[in-house]
Image (cartoon, rainbow, N blue to C red; front, side, top):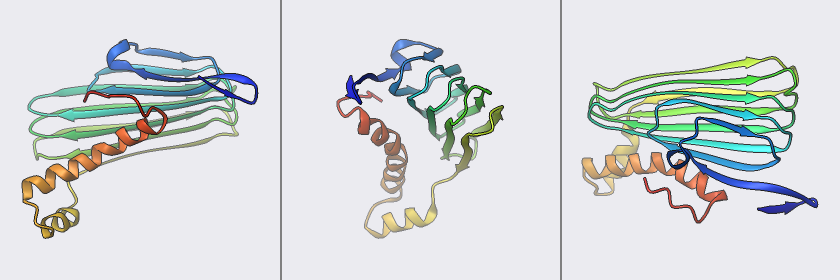
Length: 198
């Protein structure tokens, strides 16, 4: 908990792998961080109060025949709140990742800020990734962005690491670790004592 401007605000970390929640309602002002790892399903994040800052972080590591199907819905019902979703995935072998993300700003959600980003790293030619972000905006005073990128390991980065004496395998492993670390670092900013146990 933290006190700000003489109002009691909530600061909360929610690990969906532990809580098993799929429909989350945020109705008290405060800072919330939601994390999930390798979960399939549909997840609703409903913002029902002003003064909410919601960070949503998802991490996927696909190997062998792993098959992940994910749908996220960020609903801004109340005005003056922020949601920021970042999902990163690393996929190898014959793994699959199908993602659909929706940001919906209701007419009552004026002055909302909503962000949605999905970044995927493919390590095998047999991987299948389908990532589709959507926006549905019914208010006229909002700021929203969404995007999706999927690609292979950057060859220039690998060359740089190998020029420092690393083998191909270790260079690739280091690159993947750096790609994943962004999620962990973002969570640790607000939750320094959290052990994600990935």
